[in-house]
Length: 183
Length: 122
Image 1 (spheres, chains in turn yellow, cyan):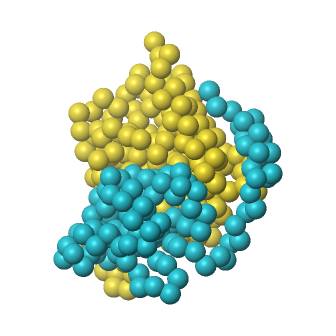
Image 2 (cartoon, chains in turn yellow, red; image 1 turned 90 degrees about the vertical axis):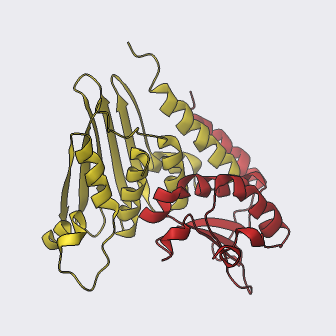
């Protein structure tokens, strides 16, 4: 993965695959505290403690019947390479929360990358999944809740061209706005 | 800065203009592999390019969707085009630049872009 936003996309796909219909994404960039942290919380089917261990380190498990992917190990490696780490908690029937921290100024921290494109792709792909997004950069923040957007649209899908282009601009403008007006 | 209030205007405008497509229409499906392997190989901009191109051309019979690992990770980003009563076409090593041609030549005009398919590259 070249960007942290790709890891975020990958984790959100896991949430959708786990049957979540609500996914919360929180990103905090705090240069003063020298930390970048993101958290993804879903209400999917959750994982047993055994499964939590196996998704973190797929190479040391004795599993034989189930595929375990590379997404979380890659994220763990990226976080640890940048002086951070990941935390994963999950409960069967409740959902999963995963957070990753990175040294903000660490030379090996990947750039966050294009969150606007990441969120546009995911929110327009799953009409039955809602996303609550919050991205803080220093004192600036941008957030949205797709349930509010859907309510304002009154049943018109995100994939209708006019709506999709509005969403694209909405995300691009607000994401780039986070980087300006900072002391 | 854009605000949600603008969506009300879009809604009013759309409701007059369109009749929403039925969910179960027999249409064309463009399926982008978006597992870890696909994402790492660059599937995200490919997915967005397809969605935009389809929206721009107003192709209401076409849906763009995602799937997991197709099982040939070294060919990612992989895109499958599934048309009713036709054999599935698998495009490999896709880029946003290739998307315009696939939509124009294959989806709109019905001519598979053979040089991008797995048959021409494996």
